[in-house]
Image (cartoon, rainbow, N blue to C red):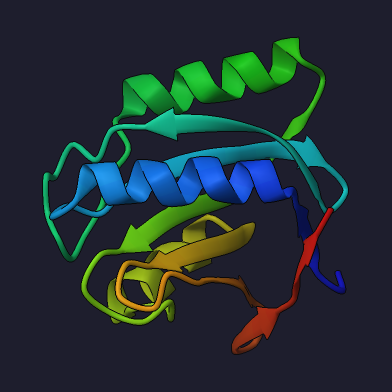
Length: 130
């Protein structure tokens, strides 16, 4: 994969959602095909934490069911870092191993997005805006 395609309107939705969830991390599932995000599934951070997020099993199951109905895949996981840079934390790295999709992180301090994949190491991949 050479990058992930994320529309300007999806970026706006995700950044506004993240700002509204402060001081907690926000989270979402990204639906799409190949490397293009086609839809967002905004989820609740049941941890209510500024440094961690957990999506409930109920919402995960609901998200995968919706993706199946829409004939798309869950191609990514989104979350915010309200008070730090958009770079995977040690906790993120651990969960990237069990969720080998693209992870997009939004920084609440820099107001930017970065995308990552876990291969043998964590690599940053470009976000292509359409």
